[in-house]
Image (cartoon, rainbow, N blue to C red):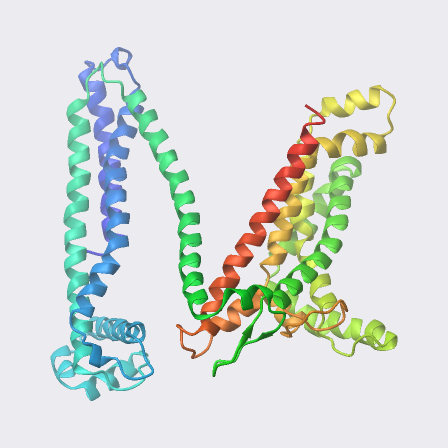
Length: 482
């Protein structure tokens, strides 16, 4: 049974349980709902939740561990000799997965699989017909591994359907049997809702923890192959997949900070001033037109901004500023990427700051004006200080967006990893090099590929430090007003 069909059956069972529980609750009170401790709707909600929650938990956990079981079934059919020189077991397993997907497509077309499984060449031709790319003809062991993974998947899905539906039916029966006029369905519903909210928060925390641990494990693997002192103290970035690489991070950190600083220098004043105007000075009609026009900038794809930087802004800065002043002759520069990225993040500062300024109580404005302050003094000394935590959050969001941007940097700033103060020279950022190191036909276990995880962990640490600094600033400023 497919996951989609199973989900529809669970939803139908939950809906039926909701309706049956409502009817049963009223019937248990002799048709008088006033005799019930909880409204019939609470009985229905508790029943529906008792059907869906256990089934959803089982479904999620089963799907998480299903991959390990399928991989184990496939690995049981493979031998170390199946891994040719220059390859890895992970690459072989990727081929097994593609073969299994191709067999599923062929089976869905009604193709007889037995003759194909007996002939690797015929199977390779059939896989090519359905768009499954293979480096060569499948070996007998990879075919067996693909068959084993398909059988394990079928068995897993059958077991998943049985266990999930059994849990759902059990939850339905248990709640229906407890329905009486005295049953506190409202309390049980609230308690279950609270645990669901706790579970959701734990999922968010667990996701963050999983990201950090995955980055950390691969980073430690990288530092076992490459000296961490060279990574953190070397000022040269020159990866060579044939060996002898220099993987110093500082040229990338400098490029990231430089581009982001220029972007924030453009976005923060423009965004904050426009937010103050829209919140304090603009009429309702003007605000209704201007704010959506500013927010349109957030909906433009970054590739479009990158093309704008490559075709328009870069040549403009080169022809009008860098070449006449003798400080550069390339259209790809830090200034190009920073200016365009600043335009891109203006809505993050403007829109959020506008909403935060509007949330400041009107009584603060009225009190300031009543004491004789002018509107501009009220904005500077009352409104902006009261809205500071939210404004700092908006600026921090814009900074994080700028630090994580890739496409604008690739097209606007180039890919040169260097340390320079000249904003009209080409540079690059951490995110660009993460992408370049992980793409292409490269050996995954080489330092030149694993360095991407060390770069990612460094970028995560950088944004975490930004959050901590912003939190310290906000708390220190708040103390003056509390």
